[in-house]
Image (cartoon, rainbow, N blue to C red):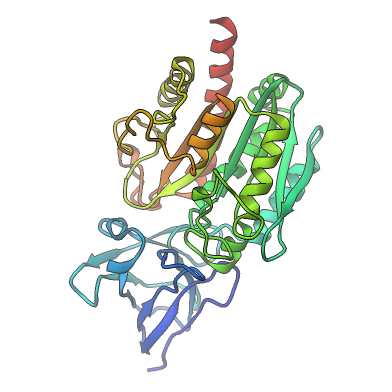
Amino acid sequence: MTNIQISAAFDSGNIEVVSVDGAEAHLTIRRDHQSDFFQWFHFRVSGAAGRELTLRISGLDASAYPMGWPGYDAVVSEDREFWSRAASSFEEKTDAGTLTIRYRPEGDLAWFAYFAPYSMERHHDLVANVALAEGVTHRALGVTLDGQPIDCLEMGTGSTQVWLYGRQHPGETMAEWWMEGALELLADPASSIGRELRKRCRFHVVPNANPDGSRRGHLRTNAAGVNLNREWAEPSAERSPEVLAIRDAMDQTGLDFAMDVHGDEAIPAVFLAGFEGIPSLKDTQQAGYARYAALLERRTPDFQTKLGYPLTRPGTGNLTMSTNQLAERFGAVTMTLEMPFKDHLEAADPRQGWSPERSAQLGRDCMGALLEWLIERETA
């Protein structure tokens, strides 16, 4: 029996092949460059038609978030458009933690990933399409260590300065699927929500804050192995030019509302994290955050407020993280949106789990909640 072939030599690819025996493979995940972080994988299997694939990824007890593996099913696609789930199981005591993926493809090719990939080619298509919309302008805020542009799309004529940015952690690809949904609504002249938001706000949208990590197949870091969401207090051109460029642009425009879009490996829910621990916390800030969360929870079953991160004690907020830094710096309402790698269990989808489609819809729902939030603020 011939062996299957496995490759990750493409945009955002990440896997190391230990051995292959027929339709079975033993694999490991490559660490982020100059970093110990690893969890993201993305690879192609060929020669697989009609064969029961058994793919074992080992060494996962040392991964960035070992609690992300229990209850997790890998994503798989045969056309690279629709991503479903492949039955997976995790054995903590086997080969230092092993995820076993089982799948029988219809055709010769199947792609597997930690979450549905969002390629840099798709990123450039998104930027090009939105930039052509009426009233939208584009600017590159700077360049990365690998020389890629840091794209920012801007629109709207209002006075409220809104910043949306995602994928500081490149393996959290659901963040850019979210951006796709949000941007399509904001740039659509037929969308009443987008039209009203553009009247009230000036939007600054960074769909991918970490292009280098995205292309390299990293989980959490940029080309220098730096976690960008720990650089916001003192970013530098040498370590974190992405954060330096974005924060400098925010200083130029001002900031009233910001959302940093992420994915969470372990918690099976969509939730928000705030800035309750910053030194100069104002009651009006915290009330604005709570009001937005309540509006979003009312708007969609794909958001909840019961599960999430523990609250930070007063005065102990980590100002190297963007949500805390921006709330402190501007006195603004800021937040981190987290989507699951697994599923939003309150509205579970056994075929896809959390998906690109639901991420994009959540982007649209978040914009609808923002409009409600602004209207309530105007009439308060």
